[in-house]
Image (cartoon, rainbow, N blue to C red):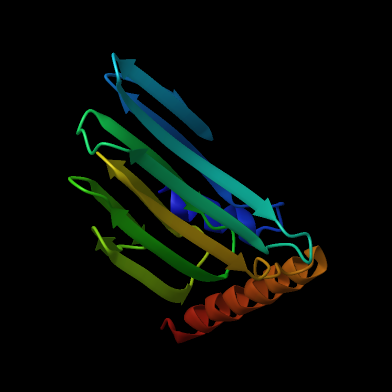
Length: 198
C-alpha cells in the first residue's frame, strides 16, 4: 500500500525524495544502538573486545540522485561470539535509478560475517570470504534493504551507489489536457451507448 501511495504522490508532481532508515548496533556483553554509528569496547583483565558499526551517506552533488551509501562493521580481535556489529539500511526509491551494489564479508578466526541485500523481492546473501556485486534499475516505490553483520572477528561492508533522477512528472498543464481528453472520451462513449439502445 505504501508503494502505491508513493508512486501516486510522485506522479502528481509532488516533491519526492528517497526515504531512508538506518540503524547501527554494537554488542560486547551489552548493546548500544545509534541511527548512524557505534563503537563499543569491553575489557576483562587482559582480554579486550571491540565492535564497530557505521553507515555513511555521501551526496556527490554532481546531480540530483547521485548518492552513495556505505555500511561497515568489524569486530575482534579474538573471535569471541559475544562481540557483534550490525549496520542496516532501508531505502525506498522515489524514481527510476541505476544502482550498483557491492559488498564483502571477511570473517576472521572463529568469526562470522554476513551481507544480506533484498530489492523488490529478490535476495542476495553472502558469508565469510565472499563478495557480491550487481547492478539493477529500480522503480518508484521499490525498497532496498541491506544488513551487514560481523560476529566474533573480521569485518563486512556493503556499498550502494545510486545514479539518476526520479522520472520527470508531467507539467500541471499536461494534467488539465489529460483530464479534458478523458472527459471527451467518456462523453463520446456515453453518447454511443445512448444511440445503441433501441
